[in-house]
Image 1 (cartoon, rainbow, N blue to C red):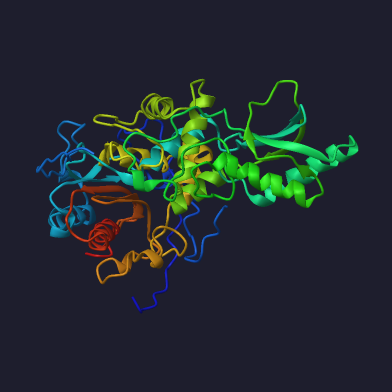
Image 2 (cartoon, rainbow, N blue to C red; image 1 turned 180 degrees about the vertical axis):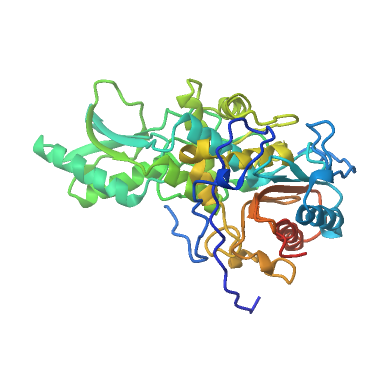
Length: 459
């Protein structure tokens, strides 16, 4: 990987104005793509914000299992070549024998290639695509999370509102506002408490390995600061606030404790997060597990349900199936990040979620997912050179041309995204493998090759 390759920005992507998801359409040239996708992402650094046995099915076809009579006879020559190459390359021994994959044509919704696409496998962080879609739909892209400081009974209470992007600087600004109010009231000392009652227990999801927390994901609470990987993010945030208060001349009495804010407490400071669309963009770009889990809980709350894993995943199911008509056959979801090894999602479901991003009617709501997809070769993203992606002879040609969400767990690797094919039409693809015994980097190289095949640059 000592070479230097210039990454060419991809061509503009313009979603179509379809009126019935997954129904076949006929498009003239004038009906193609009216809205430019901000996919011309320069490949540069990205600014950061703050178990069971695997299913197996050996059948490989070029048909859409959901549409009787569909065959590859209607494919153009470019898609036929892609399908033929994928039939061979999906058998790469590095991928193992348990792969679910599919390629769709975004304009027609036709199936270009299918390999066990209804087989539900552990999708790892591709789960975040479902979480993000539900969050943006239920909360709205302009939603902002609020963190409050209230005063009552001699105590300043930091009240968590599900903002996983809260920073020390944000707490510092809130501390200054609180100090101004305290001093105006003639107060020079307070106790400090945290209120994270917005999220009930359990804080750990089914299927999480003990080794995941607190570094890979922290126990899920409604309050955290600077993305700290600690077991009690709420107390940690309260301690940061206490230090800020002390630095501003307020005496903090005792240790930071937990307390449920009272309705009679007086508001003294508030912070609003960035828009949800910006948060989702970042979450997808770097695959932030903690943000994903917080969004799952907040989505459940907005839908009128408890902020639990169970309720959050139920809302995701409702949104995908009832709002968008996404197929949920064999779909099982137990967390928001994809760390749960109990999750099972077919490649076709992942592709159908991504296909929503090509529809003009969902542009305003879901574009932050699309724009947040890592670009092959984009430093600072999960497809950056620091992760060894798209850096071999077969896949290097796709640098700057593939936009995809990664997924990586031991024994479970996924890659699902968008790329423009040789015919100039946008393709939606999803590849998920479980159980390969090859080295993880070798599996990823093979998957990158599949994506380059869909693009057509690896002919």
